[in-house]
Image (tube, rainbow, N blue to C red; front, side, top):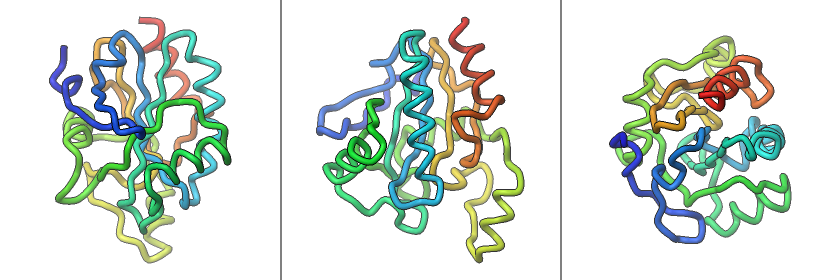
Length: 180
């Protein structure tokens, strides 16, 4: 088992969990936010989850308030938003930090394991044009960045925030991981 599998985090109901709880599954780990321009990605993520869950895909949502305070709600408010607005059934966990000095150990290890992201393109430039200063590489760029973990617990890919659940690059990586 990989060290990353043993890092504890909290479910949105307060219970403790680890990635080892999803051993044997392919996990797509996403830092999510409810007040972001990318928030509509919840819809495609849920569709993908429902389509591929029986094959062993888990989508794990980690709310984070690191980017322009776009996830200000409590865990209960986040859970309510996800279920009422997007009918999310994939696991949403307790809010964590994915950047900065208080970055959660899970994200420290995800970034260390996969410092390069796929799909880093014009969206980065758009952030700069809006007067924002994106985090330097290899840090998480923004909400809805995605890490793919295979059935053996290895972080095998990382996707830029604007790579959606319908993107062929993400779908291909998931299909390959599910086939292993």
